[in-house]
Image 1 (tube, rainbow, N blue to C red):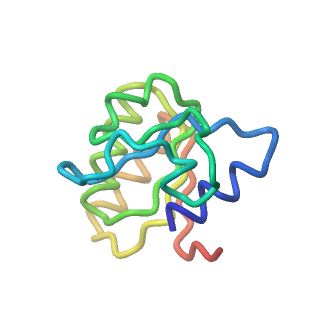
Image 2: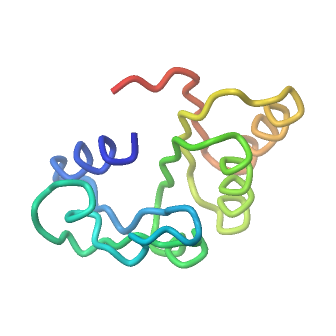
Amino acid sequence: MGRAIVNTAYKNDDITIVGGIAPVGRSYIGTDLGILCGIGKEINAKTYGDISEVIHQSDVIVDCTMPDVTMSILEKCLEYNKRLITGTTGFKANELLKIKEAGKSIPLLLVEIFIY
């Protein structure tokens, strides 16, 4: 899903991609997203192993991961006062309550079916 998001966002002149997040230890951390996602050229947006390395450059975080990762991203969005769009599914009831509560502090969109 990440590649599809990058490729779609890249085609939109109103969107600037500042980076992507990968699980810690992945060999492609540091790789430009344009190369990683098949755009065929560097787009000046690399892959990071920690959202804290790039969140300050972002206006909106787009997330399609797993519930535990999304909850961690949500905490960073609250800390840095950033907007969050997430297409993650499979949340537990207590996680959904935390997401709903976070929506009172930051703009937040939970899309339970994210189809590309």
